[in-house]
Amino acid sequence: MIRPALVPPPVPPLAFSPEVAEARAAGAPLVALESTIITHGMPFPQNVETAARVEAAVRAAGATPATIAVIGGRIHIGLTAEELDRLGRAQGVAKLSRADLAACLVSGRTGATTVAATMICARLGGIDVFATGGIGGVHRGAENSFDISADLMELAETPVTVVAAGAKAILDLPKTLEVLETRGVPVVAFGQDDFPAFWSRSSGLAAPLRMDTAAEIAAAHHMRGLLGLPGGQLVANPIPAAAEIPRDEIAPHIEAALAEAEAQGIAAKAVTPFLLQQIFERTGGRSLAANIALVLSNARLAAAIARELAVIAR
Ligand code: PSU
Ligand code: MN
Image (cartoon, rainbow, N blue to C red; front, side, top):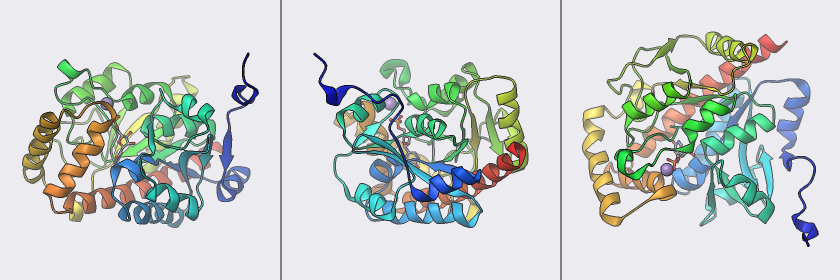
């Protein structure tokens, strides 16, 4: 017999914060934000401070932030300051991707959403634009490990425009671009020809597409909807010049971090958080300062895109 507690409700368990509920009712522009960057991407207390600053940046740019996480078996779209703080301090929070979301919800547990899971939740909440740091991608050595982030498949399936500073430079960027092309995901460099590489403005690889205004990105998002195309767009916004760590400078730290991961046998979901932590230590915290600067910049661009989309929808 099915235990009554496990019979799911007829609708997904969404919990909107008062701020987000009000914005939705008014048709005001919204920007989704993820929570894995808080629980697995940055150390405490910079994680909580950054999350609050990113939300403030979205508001200052004229949109409403909706930080997404699963808390107590419900998808929270918009977190209170207290919920953010608790999530940022918590130890051992689950990292939820597409594969884990339903299981976490029925278990009544708490988990942080990756890019993939945040896209799914944003769509459920009617949010078209999402800002993060860097998406997951094809890991180096994927020809042996098969480690390809579910973020790439999600971009092909779920119609949300994701603003990131490219893909993290710990990855195999040419293979990441190949998978995105195969899956029909538009990869749009913002304001330059090169695909950015997270901590660095340039990867040395040309981006497939370039756009120079938020209005053009919003129009393309809308056009994809008219065409009935599933999937979103990846907007690759280069890190602000003042905060960048040039490619040649970060490269040896990335190599050392990858070697350490290999030596310690780090695998699966642990790889990305481990590498970010290693690079943080090896750069004396400079990678974190860069990460914070690029997320803030992505939040501002995402807000501008969300505002343009709200104009189109009117
Ligand atoms: N952006 C950051 N820091 C992060 C992430 C993004 O600046 O930690 C997270 C996102 O949640 C992304 C995840 O989905 O890293 C990728 O994990 P994986 O490589 O295991 O798919
Ligand atoms: Mn992986």
